[in-house]
Length: 292
Image (cartoon, rainbow, N blue to C red):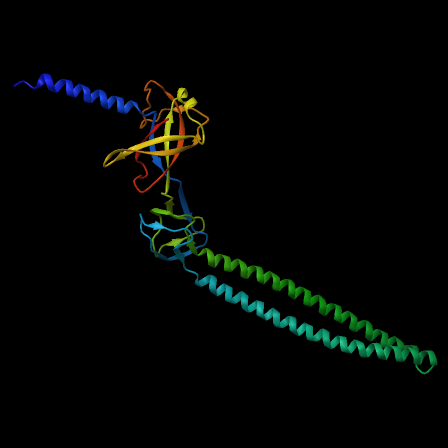
């Protein structure tokens, strides 16, 4: 029996159906994520870097620890100097207290000599001597108070330095800035890290971005904040979800080689970004389609 006459129409209808399904999408692109590169803020040897690529990371969780031995010793040295200056301040306070007692005694003696000079019982030289002693003690008290102010200023400087070291100690424990997946490790445990040097790259996979391309004629069909339908391949077939247009490029560009728009004759296209929720089905780099 000749089945050719029945088979050809079926194949033709299948091809037409596939073509209609392909033409139902308005734009094509690939899924991407907002990637965050986490860098070191201090120098030292990495003593722990436990997460592996592909592991889930929580915001605020420590992923990398950098050796803090030298910073800790520096902090101890500064704290020792800070305590020493505190003892010096107590010594200067005691000197000022003793000088005040001595000043009170000299003031009483000064008044007694003044009365004796008025009565002729003491000489002007004796009055000059007591006045000189009072003036000298006053200058010594001013100098001591000035030393105390200088020590206080030095102590404040040390306190700032201690705070700086404490901040550096905190930054030796590298925390994840967001919830996401560890994509790439640039360093391993035992290697040296330097300030500004990338340690790892992560991305939030709860929401992905479909970067697609549309022609100028299609711009009137979309707007920022508008909802669109996004479809992608899954084991059960083509799955559709709702996305939101978050960005439309203000400039046209030549059609990327990996992208085909609905109208293949169009040379210039506009890039758009569509934010879609991800239940774990979407991966970075997967192709997707947009239906307006």
